[in-house]
Image (cartoon, rainbow over all chains, first blue to last red; front, side, top):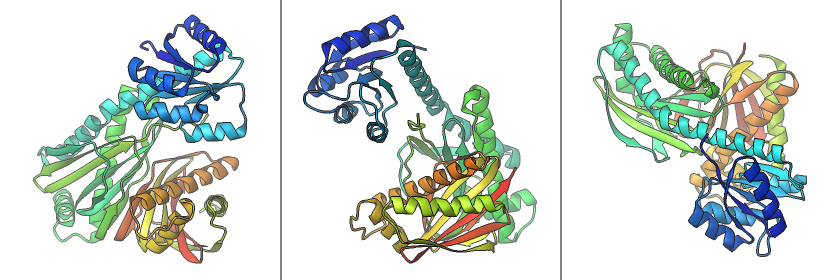
Length: 287
Length: 153
């Protein structure tokens, strides 16, 4: 694990000194400290830490207001609340601000060190997934298509924005569950779907039911293969897929989703266009 | 389908809705259904893996979705089923499935849930398993249906 750079935010110089000493002894790099909201914003902007320890009381704001302010500078910044007060109310509010963890003062060095290591390991694990997942899903689509039709799709319009979209006619939704949860959507026109189903079953004029089943199974194969590929790279992800749900009809609008990472692409194939959209959520603080 | 699964999901609605300010919620009936579910406007889909596997569908009209979203946003008027309202219903689906998973874990069945996918329009949902149970509920006197397409391992 690379060095974790930390800024300590606390209005008490004594606490700053204590926490910094403990962190130093545990092998973390304390790159700065702040005694107020404005100093914290300044420190995060200039020093770019990976993680901030946050006191709950500051002269010009409380710890959660301060967390909000520094997250405006760096939305992915990890924050640990270190406070002498630790009741349900504070925990609930802290959770709402997506704080990564809480430690009560007086600080136990081992507990703090373990918490930081766990948070940073989780972060690296998500970053690793973020770098790999889309290639795996695309590869799974290419392989599946190639095995079925001896032809490879051409990919275009790769996007990483999280937008609402209208279906081309048939959408297959696959829930993904593991260390991180997510979902895959495979979308295409009725015409393409019929072409694919007829091609696979070597039969024209297939009943709608067959066409739906074929699409569900194809999505299942693609998502399952992609998750296996990812699990081979890092077994901790433990990704598995829920059974496919096929959605069809005259008007299908899929909402913009609350996902921390999402990538979509259009695949041009001999049987028409296939739209692939995959996204994952970073696990939320649930400690 | 196991009674515990049905109870967990109907209780999740009865637990969660009042927390959002919707006190007028009732369980009407439980029906066997087929695997073709016609949308009445909005459907939230959540995948399930663990000791149970399958999908759960939360189905409602757009009016019902807007009404629930309005409660979730502190009584704010929701005229259109816009991005904000959609994200509220997506969150609702997540909360209901998460609550049901807690209730199920208390009966010894551990499940994990996927992120929700929210769809609106005129469409049909085809679930993987042929046997589906529909829990007919009412939220603010408007139909709110849960379709369970779930198998035990």
